[in-house]
Length: 256
Image (cartoon, rainbow, N blue to C red; front, side, top):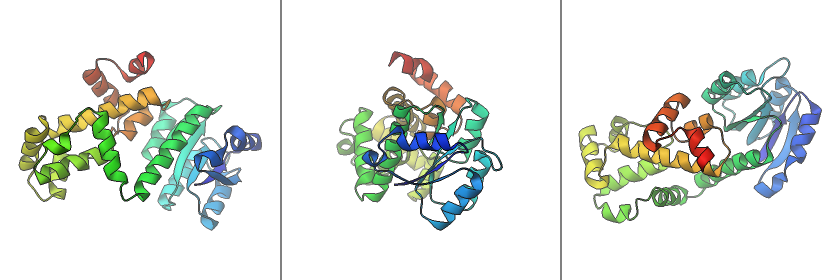
């Protein structure tokens, strides 16, 4: 994957180039820019897969640049780096779709973990077997062994597979039922009959279990994990997590 580094400090760019062996993780730093205008010129003239940029730059800020990138629909993933641990900055960036919000000085381990997650997602999308493999891994992780064999109803299996694959997306019983051309009431009945819980309970269970994995296996920030598992509001995620697990995400990570 081709990487563009953007920071108004040349020393920071040099440091990012040397912080890890990029090729080892499937990435190549192909360009760098000192400001938003320079970055947009590069995005116009050559293909880029990942942008890593500072949030505070003279002229066009990182948030302003991110807005332009989304408005022009450049097909790039974005990681924000910042010396400011401010939730309002992070919240604005999350709403514009970023992979992670990394504090300076960037932690090598956190950067590598973020790069691996991006790479894994890209590989799953390219593989015709990716979504099924992801579903099977997730089912195993949440301890619903034998669910596919126990679920004999073909529509129920499709519903469950869809939720397993797309739990991180915005979803409701109504939209799910519409997608499979059945009534919400019937879809709800299928969930109860085949997994022993309601649609919303099943979806919440998967999201929280996946969040627990990310909290123990990565250094991603809690609000980033919330977005990755399907919660648009970080505070709501924390409250749901507390209700399900008995403690807040930060405490769970401490104990894990």
